[in-house]
Length: 373
Image 1 (cartoon, rainbow, N blue to C red):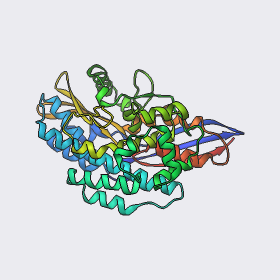
Image 2 (image 1 turned 60 degrees about the vertical axis):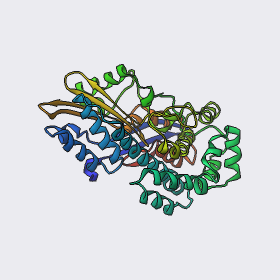
Image 3 (image 1 turned 90 degrees about the horizontal axis):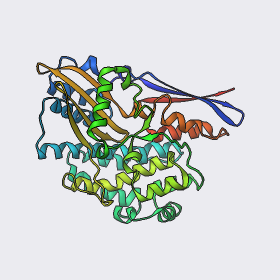
C-alpha cells in the first residue's frame, strides 16, 4: 500500500508556561473502502483487502471474508474459522513483538532486537511452530522467565521483575519509574469482541453505512473510545492493579501488550473458544448478519478492533465500510488528545508525547510538533 493511500497523522501540541494548552490531531488517512470494493465479488474483495494494507493484511482479509459471508448468510466451518483465528493471532503477536523489541527500545535510546523479530517472521506460516518460537522468545528475551511464571505475578511481583532488569523490556518498564503513568486517558474502552453484543454492533454498522464520515471519526455511545490490547486485557489482575495505582496511560498500554503476548503461545495451541490462563475467552474474529444482504465482521488486531461492513447486491459489493482502530484512538477528541492534554509541559514534553502516541500505535507515519505560546 503506497503512502498516498496510507496518509499520515500530524500531532501538534501548544505549550504555554507549565501547561499544554492545545492539542490538535490531523489525519490525512483517506476513506477508500467504498471506492476500492464497490462492484467486486466477495472473494476478489477479500484478496484485495489482504494486499493493499501494508500492516495487518491478514486481519483485513479475514474481516472482508467474514463480513461478506455474513451478508450472504454463510457460516464458515470450524476448521476454516480456526485457521483464520490462528493467522490473526500470529499477525497480532508479530506486531506486539515489533513494538516491544524495536519501536520502544529505539525511542528510549536502547538497542533493538532484530534477530528475534526475524526469527518470528520465519515461522509465521506455521502457527504451532510459531507458538513454540514465541514461547522460547518470551522466556529467553522478553521476560527472562517462563510465560506461565511471569503471568502468575501480581503487581508487586511485576515491580520486582522490572527492577531486577532481567530483560530489555523489564529495563524499559523500570525506566518509567514509580510515578503516575504518562498520557492517561479517561475515554471509554471500546468493548472487545467477546463483550460486543449484537445490538450495539449492528448500530455501529448502520451508522457507518448511513454516514461514511463516521468511519473517519467513530463514536461509541456518542463519545470517542479507546481500543487495543488495553481494552482486551483490562480484566487481567496485574493490569487492573497498575491502572488503579498509576492510571490508564502509556505504561498500562505497553503492559497490556506484554500480557497479551505472554498469553499467545497457549492461545495458538488451544481449541476455539477455550479460555486462557486468566480463565477469560478472548475472541479475535466474529461476524454478524445484518438486514438487507448486509453483514459486519470484527477482527482484533494489535492496534485494536477492526470492523468491516459489507452490503451485497446481485452477488457483488454495493456498499463497503471499514472502521479501523487508528480512527478510534487518534480521534481529534479521543484517547490521544486526552492523554496529551494531561502531560507535564517540562523539558521532556516532546519525548513524552512520542511515547504516548506510540503506545496507541498509529498504523501510518506520524509526526509530533511542539509550539510555544
